[in-house]
Length: 103
Image (cartoon, rainbow, N blue to C red; front, side, top):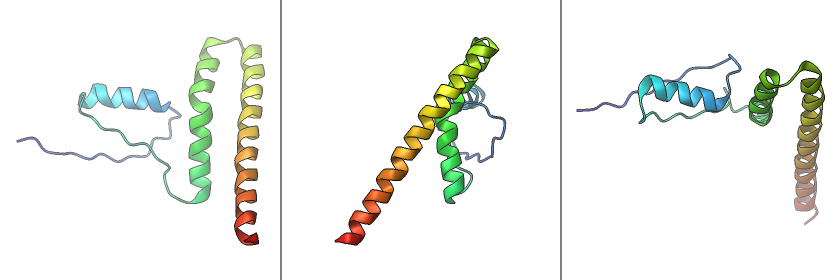
């Protein structure tokens, strides 16, 4: 009779999520279920996790596929896009909070 085995570990290698999933599927088979989340639920860990998901795959691809000068330009552009997104999210939350308090 099959048994369920759960594995929990912290990966600090900077490996993209897609590669982690692929590596674990190779190791443990197609029935492998992978759940990737922040190391804790404190706000800083959640924010860091989210930013990492927004940048890591892009950064890794650019790092190995582009000359350094192209990488530097593209990473600055991506950084700007992420900062704009974070600013937009923060602005939305602030406005939403204030609207609830005015009611």
